[in-house]
Length: 197
Image (cartoon, rainbow, N blue to C red; front, side):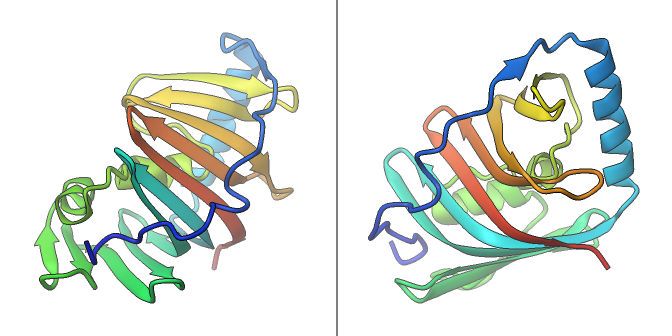
């Protein structure tokens, strides 16, 4: 299907890493520190990153570059697969989501995850990922474990298991590798650069 990027090469740089050791999830001091991190991160409503994305669902997968720009609840996400020369754009503005660049023309809806799954067959938890990609919990019950450095190592939320495999040196620190899995669906992000205005 043209809307999907078929893997032509191994996902170099996105596999082969081991997760960092974790500490007890009920460590009160670490949970308090995480809450402070999340409060600080959410005080910045305008942020962006660029990097690489790999997704798979039931044996179908693809990879490419990603640029994600977020402002409050709105986003502009652009993906490109150099090998297949395909690209698409997912945006949210004023509560409306648009997916451009797919076979059959632009699609419009209110739920980004549902729109992506309908158009591509992939499950990508866009709304939750806006928090997870910054190393924060999203709304709802969550289980979190921490690395020896006191940063999130693993997170379980909304039926997804998320691993944070590398962090930058900013304050507060932000993830550089985020791997999420739910059943036969997986999303892997390797972030090359973060930016804030």
